[in-house]
Length: 133
Image (cartoon, rainbow, N blue to C red):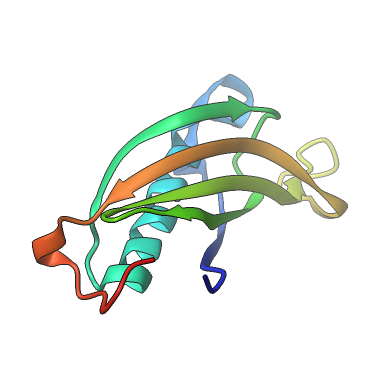
């Protein structure tokens, strides 16, 4: 099977801050993962499919408004109508409010902030895949 991946890079804005200290809630990472899984379904089946659930979710480090997050998904299993995707979100730029109101640093090494495993299903009648392994 050809490796199927999807990657997004986005800046967390003030509108994403939900808690004190400009902390972004974990649900924002899950929204990114949902977009990745949707792209995977389009790549594999020509249809957005239905994200049916997570097998696991781990929140590993805080995310703040001003941080840049790179989220990636890798298809690890292709079933008849389902696709399992390993997901990871990494902080690649960190806001530095301690330096200035608009300060930020490119991180020398990305920090994993969230990991998850999710499954999407594309109903057979919606799939345009010629053949699914």
